[in-house]
Image (cartoon, rainbow, N blue to C red; front, side, top):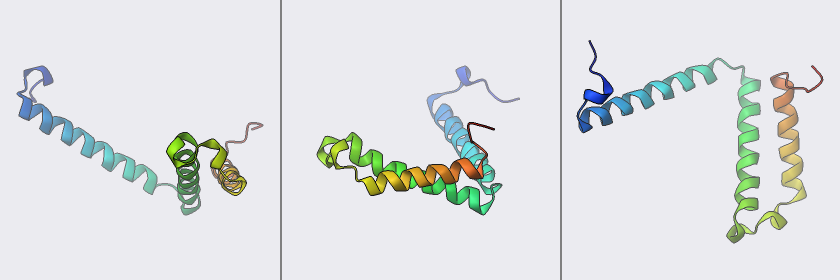
Length: 93
């Protein structure tokens, strides 16, 4: 029988949580592996454009919201539309 978390020593708890995080990483990798290539690409594209736009918009030392280009916003919008299409996220359905 496994030891209860509250009865573990600090080193055992650290090892326990490292194992839990590794199991979760494997589960996430397996779940994304089940997506179609188009779905995976849609998710990656949205993440890329969100990262680019938010990095620039949220941090004043990067320029702030005034420095976000119309091109970046259009690309983010296109990526959002692709994601909505791939996962049937249209509000009307």
